Image (cartoon, rainbow, N blue to C red; front, side, top):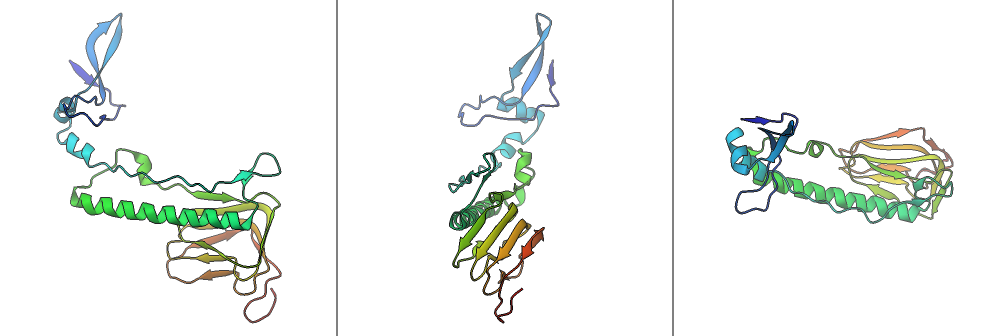
Length: 223
C-alpha cells in the first residue's frame, strides 16, 4: 500500500541517467516502531501516479538572473541601508534596467521554445516579480550638475524619508518598460528643464509625498 502525501508536491531531482532520481516521497504501509516510513518516489512511480510528469518536469524553466553588484551601504543613522550619492544611485538603477532586459530576453526565449506545451510552473514564485527597491538615506541631499536617472524596468521603487534631489537638467527619465514605478518621500530641486520626462508610450509612474521646489523649466519660470 502506498499513500501519497497530498501536502508534498512531486519534486524530482534531475541529473540521473538511470531515472532513479528521487521524486516526491510516499508513506509506506510498513511501520517502524509505530511510525510511518518515508521512502523516495522514483521517476517511474511519479509517471504512474501522474501520467506525463517527467515531460512536465523537463519543461520547467531553468532561468538564472544575475544578482546586482551596485549595492546600498549603511547610512549615517546606523541602521538604514541606502544610497547617499547621486552617481551611485544612478549606476544602481542602470544595472536594474540591464537585469530587467536580461530577464525579458530569457523568458521570451523560454516561451518561444515551450510554445503550446506550456502548462503551469512548479515554483509559484515564478508567477511574481519582486519589487526593486532603492532607498535613499534619510535626510540626505543628492547633488549633481546634471545627468538624469533613466528608469526602464518594472516594479521599481525609489523611496526616502525627508531627502532632497538637487540636480540640474532633468531628474528622472522614464523609458517604455518603466511600469508600476513608485517614487515617494523626495523633494526635487534644481531642474533646469523638465524635472520628469516620458519619452515613450507605456511608462507608468506614481509619486507619493513628493515636493517640487526651485525648479526652472524650459520657459525659465521657477516652480
